[in-house]
Length: 213
Image 1 (cartoon, rainbow, N blue to C red):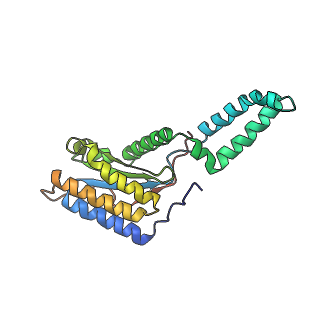
Image 2 (image 1 turned 90 degrees about the vertical axis):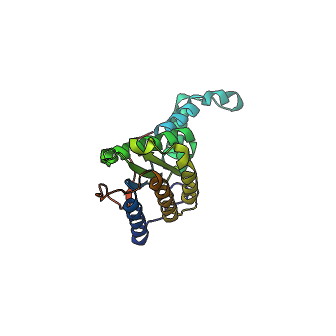
Image 3 (image 1 turned 180 degrees about the vertical axis):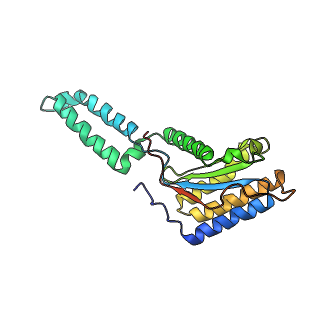
């Protein structure tokens, strides 16, 4: 397991998150979906690349050794490093932060469309997305939201949530960002007539995608 294990979300926490979403949607012409995934990619390709590069440049150490470095030595080193990088947290730590953030953003966008947040009547849905292994949080908003709420307005809420994720406080993080989102949405999308709940309010929990990075 990578770093701090993801805190299990019990039914009490799920119920609080569900009720908090329902309360925001009762007041706003918007739809909120909350999703947490263990990871946004399997970090294999970059760790394998690092293992291969290290093995490839192994011969530069030959002047400092008492024996000749052969292709067999390089192969053994590659296998050892590949196993170490792929099957331990080290590979995840070696993967550049920018690459992990790109994977998270891509997976968040994928989930936005997979759960049909782009099909609401007023195009006013938002996805609150957490990727645990990468300690990544983002808000993906539909067209109607983006026309009135700037990304910088989400940044403070996102920053606070990231600190909660690092502190293993998923419930608190979700409840605070839902409340903060509700305050912003109420300014721009107050309920003006009876509305239909178009998307599920329960917390969506995923293990992560199978694709490798």
